[in-house]
Length: 144
Image (cartoon, rainbow, N blue to C red):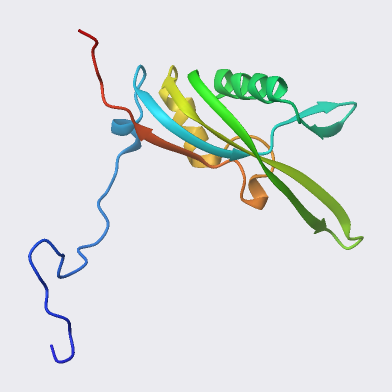
């Protein structure tokens, strides 16, 4: 291997491919997860979608999403991340999406619904890259 860097202890020397991950094994009822969600929380009135701008309305939206997508929230914080403006269609209709970052902890109550939310996303704006739910398993702990 002419020109290759010398491989030291603790470093990998080749890529061995992807490790298969079973969503059925990872997402189970009763398990707790840390989550991250960049979303476009909205409410629909009279057939028109409106962005939610106050914390109470955003938290209520996230609670509704949890009920719909099979999880209960333990704690969730939100912070505005700006607006995404895009033009759509031949008439150049402008669409504005408010981006909100949610971070917190949740517990799966319906594993199938959580798996679907993980794979398909949550809320409007998915076509613009919003709604992706990231999960990390929280270790079990006990207070003694």
